[in-house]
Length: 320
Image (cartoon, rainbow, N blue to C red):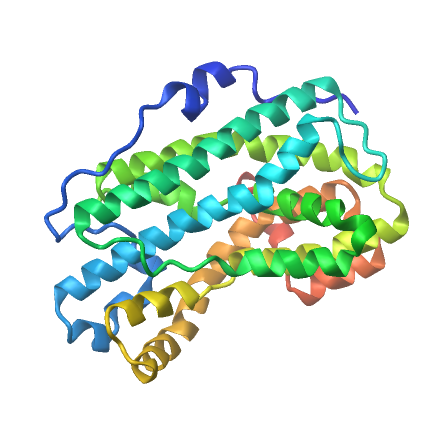
């Protein structure tokens, strides 16, 4: 297939080239640093008993956790893949055209910058709010990606990484789309997320194109292996991960019993609230794999059906 780059104006549009360093302003201790809809534990009655400062600190912790999630994602899951692609090393005989290699270099630069600016912003938010990022935990996907590498086997470890990158980079993040417009949040927070979102649109197009090169180069066994893991990777990436919330609540002095009560009370509602958003987010990935014929394999289609992913293909095309 002919590769059509979405990076022709990268020098003029990439955040690493054109956007200033975003720095949080001095905090008054009353700002909303993270959308509470994405952190429902902050409004639990046991938290309310502690007063508004506890809610404020938990929302700062939620921002820390999100920024750390992004940093770990770029460093652990995406940069190893884009570096490999930039060198022209795909998997299973994939031939990487020169233009795609050039764009892989650009994505590598983008993603390294995303990891850096999220890390630096997190440290500065901690300094300006008096709530340092001491309670952050690595996101669940990091350990689960390691497990997937094992299940793929030594001979297909690179294919596990390529599959996870294709999944994460073809998602349509409602969070990235909504936060820049959320005027409740400090302007530097919104600008930082907007910078990231702008770059990710180009990355999405790249990985959809790469998947069209990868899939025909795989044999049937490799296609089944990849296809079976896509629903698992989507779930890993999108499912609520309460470990960060639990760590933040512990940092504020909530007991193990109180933390279990808070998270137990909000988990069902949290999962229900995010279900539709996750379907929208998954639509881009599901369509990307459907477009290359992945669902033509009965084993793969069964895996997508068991994960209730097939209905997202009926969502409006603008979503994907």
